[in-house]
Image (cartoon, rainbow over the protein chains, first blue to last red):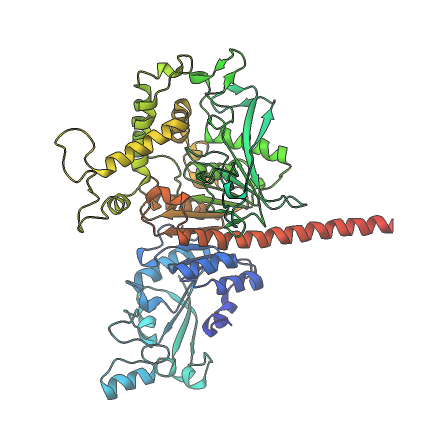
Length: 197
Length: 415
């Protein structure tokens, strides 16, 4: 069963295109796109078990830490670069966004919206860092070192003159809801962006 | 007597025997010189399937040969199996229940294939220094002729570590349509100055041995044993990591002794062996010198030095990789400083630039360059995972060709 955010974004992938998936996990998303859209696949991953699963699935996987950049990838060498649920865990999210837009013609990013109302409530009423099914960690052991909100990411796109092709927010069941559409930064749990230069 | 027979592990290919393939067709080398006729020693493991889609070629490194797996002697309990026995056999990464694995001794070798120690039919004496320098390209050309002889039009995979990995790259460049998977382990796109420097020390060790006689030591009934020992000692250091040596020779002592275990417990205050690492190296060098021809060692270090497939492509390796559709798996080991992970990443970068299908793994291992020969768990698991996929492909190729045969048959029946 594919993660819901991934099933939402596959509509933005062009058939027969080249797709780079940063943090590709066990490769199931790329394998799915190969089957359904005949894409040319490449994934980046650092977890040894996931890398082995990619090899078993016949998915091209490169063991590489994206925090060290994408300098080995040529400018414009991919049609779409995907970064799912990882932006907030990177050393310099702004730099990776630049790199993604250099390597890819268009990019798809998904991340947990820190400004979701339950997170706000946790901070406001309890004075504690939010924890939720999406953010299950304690403040001291979380890999999510650069949380951001939909408002923050919109501002980043504006300052970098990045064009937002699509923006979708989903609730905890990864469904688009009227409330989330009405006020994404308040009701949206997960943000999904499709961007280009 | 059943008791005298040794126990052969269930996952071994068992007792094997090499085959000699004789080639009468002259082979023109990169140097312009010609080898008129030659032999290649070959071992095969497993069974070639009906459509010949399950063949895997193993390319050996500097000191390897055709004996990659299994045993020769059913009686000798001390016999060690072939050099890559951990990877080849039933249930192993190169599963001989699924694949037909081919391993050969390269031209210029000293394990039975034609090389400097073979008799030159024109003189009746060993070739010695008259044997031409062969390059990786020449090797791969001869391997392609061997493939023809075996009836293998396309390899399911060609695999090799170190110098073997260089042959795999050459296959992908020279014969892009003749392989489906290229597996390159602990290799480099070409040697660095430091690599060449170490090779030069090895060559000088051999050539400065008084028993070398300009490479005609066979005629003098002698052998430059000291020189080959020294060459191997310096080579061996480059195959191991600092961490491995510390661990190997620092077991009994307090932490932080850096592998300085003494051999006899006290310093000699002389120039004899004080530390265990000294006797270990000497032992390794001497053992090697008993089984390896000095001229072959010289030749193969030159083969390494000359390897540079980008030379025909304006120095741009990615251009060399532009042709073909085979997939690549590149692997390196964290503690390898001979061909470090950085060198493998150079290969990967060129493959990405050439828009080729490539996977890359950087295996955490303390064993240094030698790790490519060892059963490092993650390395073996990755090979297994990759080759399982290759085996599934082989089956589907088989099914497709069976279907073709079936449709041809039915057309024939209709006619």
